[in-house]
Length: 162
Image (cartoon, rainbow, N blue to C red; front, side, top):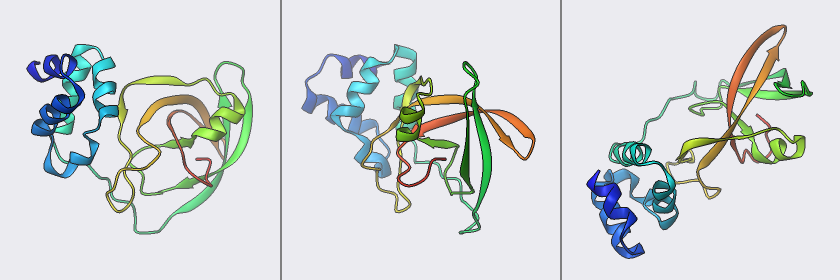
């Protein structure tokens, strides 16, 4: 709680020093003025959770070493029932399910803000230049007649849609 209060009333350089002292040694690249601004915009309890999270090492979920597969799936919005058929990459090595930010924008999908930003790391452990994930979409996903409601983090996927 003390750290959150101090981050909110200090100048940039001092705030970075305070957060750096609490950050796990392998996550120091996350300590930026942008991160501090994001933490400062959160309600106090969520800001405390974000600081606790950054104090621990990154968590990884390992993929199956290149055994990936593309499948056709149909995405449907919950509000307008707009549908789109896409190729989805399974087992990308990503921790969760993601959708490309430009695709979301082009289709006009309704996005929702997440409580706190999710840092994005490249395969080599460096922070992704496109920044943290700040929003998600909820869609229906139909793969060969099996339909599920899915939360997809919105991020820049480059050439992929999902």
